[in-house]
Image (cartoon, rainbow, N blue to C red; front, side):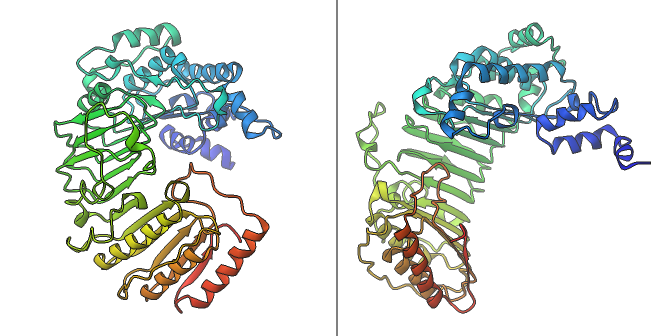
Length: 483
């Protein structure tokens, strides 16, 4: 028996597992293999619609040309047709994953509502709506984000009208749906460039009582988020760049990971005894205090953003990510407990937000953390700093550290200040085994990096030669971008 015949003879569930490893376009293409495969893809439990896999990009298209095309009427209509055709053909009784990845906006709201209702009706476990316009030139964007109807995620109300629409538009007869069960199946919800109101946020958490992961990015209507009833299943919460947000209160006793990126705001994470991963980053220090403050909250002081609001959790944190703008002075950790659980520390400083002196803050913060984190294993330093910006590094005494084994430095341009800082790390990290260096800024993938000029490239190479001469004997140096 030929290999392809042996594969075709496998049970449906095994073949569907194989198909789930392919892109949706590749999975649909298997329908031409044989009669056995013709309709197999229609029983997939994972449906992820990504524009880069569905639409054709010409080799000669620049990023701007491609962005204009995908935001144009022809490509957008083609994408919607593909989604609708797949949903009409779908035969599985349950969905594990359902995702839409396309820069759709409010003008497509009625259709998106039906797609989301489809996912809920088929008891989806992971729902992802990524309507980011990052690939679209700013001059063609509408900036009118899609927003859920309030009743779509309200389990106290029926979604019957949406199911009627499913039948009318797609000729899809949804499986018998107990609304509570539909929401109880949802474990992960990822929303990017989807506008939520405070009430909608609360409705989602109240209705989806088995939700474990909630990630909200670029939602422009959140202001005062509060969930006072304990959500017992929520383990991961990410709130990124919700620029109008002024206050966040969450009660999640089993929260393991909390990540926030945006202006300094009042944050209260209540009774999170399982919290071990925390990211608290803010790079808008230069203008955030001039923003309107409809809640009349006091301005957040630099040191209080992390060290004040999260002081009770610091001793249990294993992985901490923060930036120089949240450092209120080197004494903030001096009088606190030792951070015995901290294994992975990531510190960032952006030159456009803080100037070269943000790097000095980063150094002082590093010195403070090393003193109180005896079992720190991995250190990451992310910054962008132009080579000519070189204030003098004032050395801070740091005792030898026996557990720090790995260091990553990104945004490296060979300037003396950074080289001096790395050499300080060499001095106290006596058991260092690996150091990775990149000229790209790895602290936030959306940030633009500086283009190296020929003179800059020479400076980087000479600085790396200096580091080679001073490295601890056991350490290995890895250059991540092939310099």
